[in-house]
Amino acid sequence: MAGLILKDLMTIQRQIKTQAFVLIFFLFISIFMQQALMLFTIIIFIVTFQAITALTYDEQSSWDKYANTLPISKGDIVLSKYILSILLLIFGLILALPIVFIIHRFTNNWASTEFFLTFNLLVTLAFCMLALLLPIYIKFGSIKGRMVLIAVCFLPGFLFSLINEHLPDMTIALSNLKQYMFLAPFAGLLILWLSSLISTAIYKRKEF
Amino acid sequence: MNAIEVHDLQKNFKGFSLNDVSFSVPQGTIMGFVGENGAGKSTTIKCILNLLKKEYGEILIFGKDVFENELSIKNDIGVVFDDLHVPETLNATQLDKIMKKVFKTWDSGYFFERLTQFKVPERKRVKELSRGMRMKLSIALALSHHPKLLILDEPTSGLDPIIRDEILDLFLTFMQDETHSILFSSHITSDLEKIADYITFIHNGKILFSEGKDVLLYEYGIFKGNKEEVSAIPEHAIIRKRNGALGIEALVLKNEVNEVFSLEKPSIEDIMLFYVKGSV
Image (cartoon, rainbow over all chains, first blue to last red; front, side, top):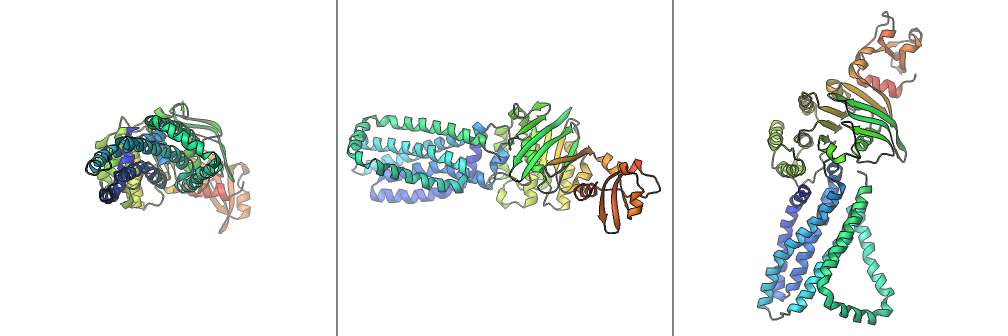
């Protein structure tokens, strides 16, 4: 497992370096616009997307064909991608939080409760996105995966229009949920765990 | 003991299937696995490695069922495919660090010795290596945890004769330990003639023969003549016949044919051609 995570980190190392420049660019923009949360969002999504990059590199080199000749279980191969994502997310948070706080410190829009809510929401969203993306990419590969992803992205819009009539009730329900927001990242983790079970089941059926 | 035993292996695809594939690789020997492109060599090897799921049959490595003892078996085997399947942004030094975490028995000293021997750059990314270099790196990776069995799927295809010779020498060095074994698939039969002890021949998903190399090369002979001359050879001595440039050619059992017939020594390639293109 440690070998797999190390391999992914080494593979995406170069990619991370390139994206560091993008981050510096957004750092200046967010300081200029006094929008720390924008920077925060970008950091979280860039780091979590690295798991997908690692999967694409694997696919390009038929890594799985080789990995499955090594003494590594299929479950570990899948789980390593999830652990990699969580590690990168933690890394992203450690990187982003001090900067975000500093920007907040020097700007006037300091509202810690609001910030805490958004923070929770973003982390949860990142977890949910991974929970959706990883099984799709493992099942369909990066090219087909992208197509399926687009299709899946239309689904929420479709569902939204279906339940549009009940929207006023929904808004009230959502605002009631606000107080439970601190639980959201844990729910996200739970969803991620369920997704890893699905991915493992998919991966075990694959042939290389 | 056999390093590998395959019994009645079956696997079906659209338009192709492996039918009752059975053969074994005795411990301490090199088995050459030959057949034309698409004959089923890679499919069989992938089934042995559990990369493809067999539909029927039994596969044993070191006497143990592959599917029940997958991880412990995979600790003791080294695999080389026709290309190096690792992300292209990695280099040999990084691969060493990764493999150290994968295999308890990983020997970094041995790995870097092989890289020096093969002149493979340690810090050049896989993407920047030539095909020959990638294959050498792949072989160094397969050997450095000191496996007992090597499974090689076309490791020398697309390489020049000098690199091929170096690689074959390395396999012979590996075989100096009597407990080591190799399953070596290739359609370059001259490579197998150099190093194999046994030859298994697969054609259209079926095993046509699995014999000692010396049995094939010394017990078989090729007779070239006209129709009348060939008809004078006892029928049971003829294995396959085919039309040649100057009449009929027959693959025969040397000991069953009268000495007056002058026979040529066949190569593995000749035997393959007789089996594929000849008739009984």
